[in-house]
Image (cartoon, rainbow, N blue to C red; front, side):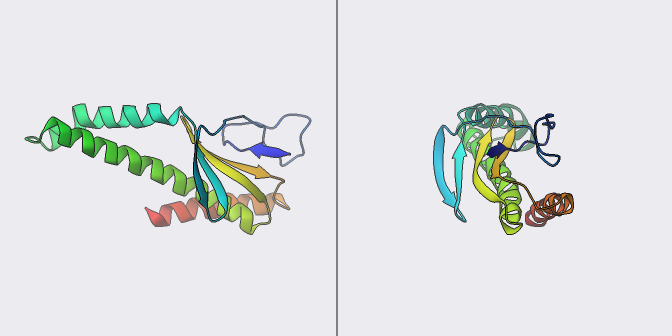
Length: 145
């Protein structure tokens, strides 16, 4: 059974003790594979890119770096939004790589409006491995920043 993992989800009564409830977020655009893991984007991520770019191009950048053209602010805003999306991908990729290392099959990663979801099949062999996986993925993300 494929699980769509999200930290805000709660266990339902019919699932195994270590299971996390499922949510469904479909890929609208496939980005290919990274380390053998299918990566995709949901259309809702476009809203995030537009909001970040608009917020930076119309507010933060003009006040922090005055005297540039409007186009410059928009390009800088889009670059910042893309870097943000790349950091989401790195975070989810860290979770997925740790899961693979612990013997859990990773079906893919989907980036969407509220972040990212690593789709895992099966579970870590124990609660301890689950906690270690979460900690190592977070540690990896901190190291790359």
